[in-house]
Image (cartoon, rainbow, N blue to C red; front, side):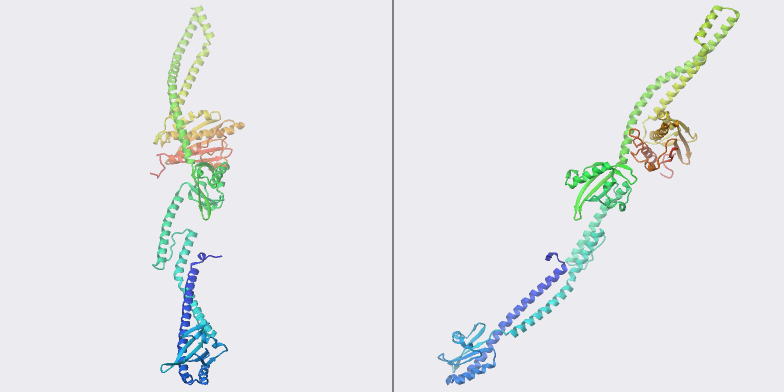
Length: 634
């Protein structure tokens, strides 16, 4: 059953107008019929009074002469009036002189009803009694019974006329209402249509058409002003929504994606049209899906403690790249159902910076310790170096003296002088193996000097490598910096590879961050050593790490080439992704190449590319602007 409040305004207005018109017509018709009835009675009374006066005048002579036949003749004249049912003439003493009845028994109420009243009614009939006078003296009286009820034909005629009038008025009312109600319903219909279009397309630039300055016009003005404010608010929210770097993703209660902002497109690498309707859980790793679904389940059960809770999950891109995320979920409801909005922040850069900071702090601590150790080693190494050089020079002098003594002993032996002493000297020389000492002691001193110099070189390289980094760029000799890094990292590669340098002697100094450049070279050399170690473990012998430098216009180019395994094609697009590694647990952290890329590209405005061939090796190519910033950039 449809309630009145649920039907359209057009039908309500039509119903109200028709009901009002019909009620007015019924009231007017009732008043008209009532008025006609009273008017009819008045007319009948006046008519009967006239008839009574005529009959009374005609009956005077009959009453005066006591002529019954004459009296009856006068009353028979009433037969011409069909609504007079009966009439009686009485003398002055109340005796009936004559009586007329259209139907038998019609005169039966004459005496009982006449009395002394001038007029009365009985069962709807009108009873009238009039005295008959002659010269002021009563001769008798006349009693008349008149049919006061409206005839059926008259009633039907009146009802037909009223019904016809009501029908015509009803039709006119319906037509006018149908026509005139558009003045109200048309603006409301346009307003409703505009509201539906705004709701369907969320286009707040639409405006309802105004048709006047009445209440409806003011309603349209208010509606348009509301649309304007909603449009401004929606534009503000949309701007925030689209410009947010974080992913803002809304899903239905079934977990299907309903909205996907530009931040989500940037983070996950998928456009909104590609993911709409898919499950958001599919964009998390297997372990993180359980965490996400647990948070959703808790919110679904009404767990307010989970609203705004920050949890860490791992995201998954279409190429199966994993990356860290921070997740917060909010729950909200509309008429369409319950929705869950997830706020996701990619923490890869932050984690990499945290890792860089931790590594920098560790390197700084190690650097301070290394600098101190290098300083402590440097002093005794200087002593050893000085003493070794002293021994070298002293032995040369002593060797000349010994050879002079040998010449002298040979001359004494030839001349026969001091034969016993000469014999003892020869025996002592043979026992000491003087010839061997003449040849080996210089070599031993030379090797000791070289060893001391090697230690001194390592100490200097350690001091240079561990020198605290500066926040400002400095012009440095890249060849020397690479040489120092190779020296420090020798223990990483010396067992699996030979290091070969092909430096450009004419390479100018390059403005860079020395400590961070050294870190990049160290990461590439260690990666090269690990790649070669994977090949050397198969019995292929030592590999080779080749580092070359050259100038290319306004750029300095450094190439680090290895003879390792090469990079598999499936992971080449991900090698600079933070925390991505193909090495076993404990051997790689997935940060080395990511840090190197950030240092070269972000901090120096350079480029870091690679060339690789599986089974043959990889070459990493670093290009740095010589002046510290890319050509053409202020």
